[in-house]
Image (cartoon, rainbow, N blue to C red; front, side, top):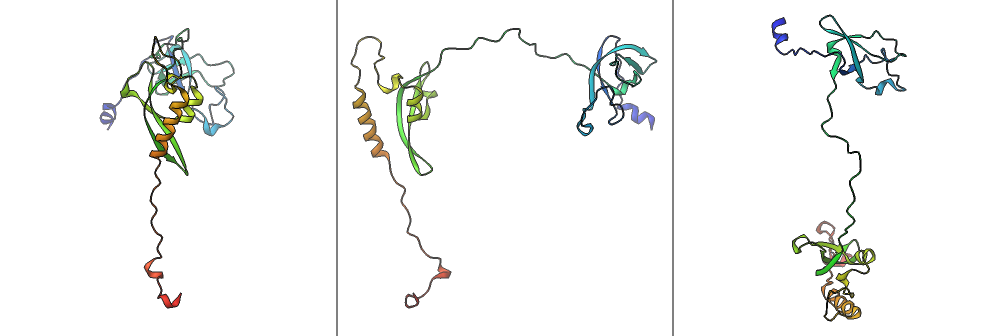
Length: 201
């Protein structure tokens, strides 16, 4: 029976000076790390430094002075502290101050949100392609980017005629009115089990 149990047993050895986590008995060994609520106490505490090896399977730890627990523990109560894989950067990464703004309105649609009809526009963003265009609420986007080139304001590079803002607004409003369609409503009917003869009504 011992041979079967030893097949799955892994022998742990630690080096003096190494840091380990310590498994404490709940409610009993609370002087090492006092907790206000013992029910929610941790399973392992530490890390604590190994001071000396005692025998083959025990180690002496450098516990706090306030603890009233014997500092020698069996190897099964210890867990090795692994070094973190990621390193903390000493300085924060610089923020990208270049923001994308709406560059062109590709399409327009009207969607229902609750009882309201909301105009949405398919926006191509600056430094982006048509494949990455997104549908956005027109009114919300205009509040966030009132001077964006997508609304036809004078931001053209070089010569050319810049469209009048009122003409664009009128054209968009006309397209919106055409696209708004109300959903047909079916005629309400009484259930067949509640139907009565006409003379009874």
